[in-house]
Image 1: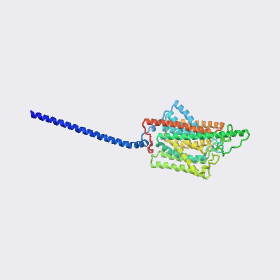
Image 2: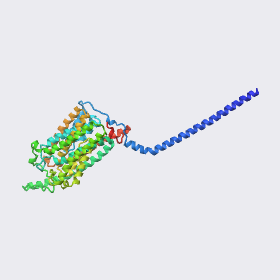
Image 3: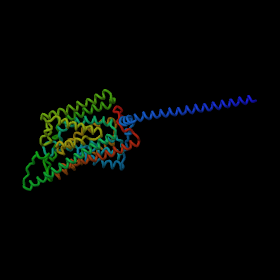
Length: 478
């Protein structure tokens, strides 16, 4: 019995020793595993900490993340407060845009997005339709009138030949940038550019207003002395008529008299060539060999026409006749190249933001000393080609509903004709063409506020939804 008790005690002691040993081993293993896991986690965290900043920057600026802006939204076309308010805003936008020669896209796009309810891409497409309608009607209206002080058309065809090919080349580049750039980048660029150009135009308008005031005083003194000699063209940029006086050049002339067929056919050639390239490119695979060949093919089409015009201006065989006194800068090739670069920038802005190139061309023409009437008419004339090409492309891609587009084209057409008629009457009564410059500055500034506000709103919404806000891959177009 004692021996049996001793065996049980031995087995109990052995079991206790085994349990204690197992507990110690497991405790050690768990502790060891915790230390290993902790070390691994610390090392992983340290690695992420070391590489996180760079990866975050790369992910932010270049990622093919989803973009909610690709969703198509086409509201139903029915009578209501939205279409009434949108029509009123579109009417005044088209009237102001046609007078200033900027198209009015900076007002159309926010109206179509915020009031009517279209998505961003559809708003851009319909905006181009409205710009085209306003531009075509404005050009038709201007073709019946002559230069304010010279016996020439109010549209400067040589100026259009120099800038229109560069404008269309820039639009092609701008569309590619629109695919790549994030919305916040476009918004920042838009606000900076538009505020700068509107400020420049405002100062130009004030300067022109002062010159007109001086000339009106001189004209009044001459009328009092029963004499009315001509003004010295070396002292003034152009000669606006004093209030109450009429001039034969303000009377309407036959439409065909103001059309220079040779220059017009060259511009149509550029338009057709670009349109063919763009249509083929639309149906080709993005980033394929054919795609890049077609992109590069646009360069010789544009450069050939502009280079020919530039050489003719340099050797004096052609002149920018809309300026009364000779512009010596037109005979300096590097100056002409600088001006052409401005035309490309205007096109890039137009393609990037979905606007008319007049936001850049209008202020540029004024800085070159072109009369406001001619600057507005010529920039609008150039926009006819660029906007119509975009409309054809958008139609083939089914980017806009035809009934809505047709309605707003009608609104823009009527508004542009009304704006041109009213402003021409005001200029005839007051004798101040600087009104056009002030309208230009106001339209650009208003566009900066409206487009900038929409852009900032979209930016905040994307940040709240944690959406991608970096560069996009041009080869992954939707």
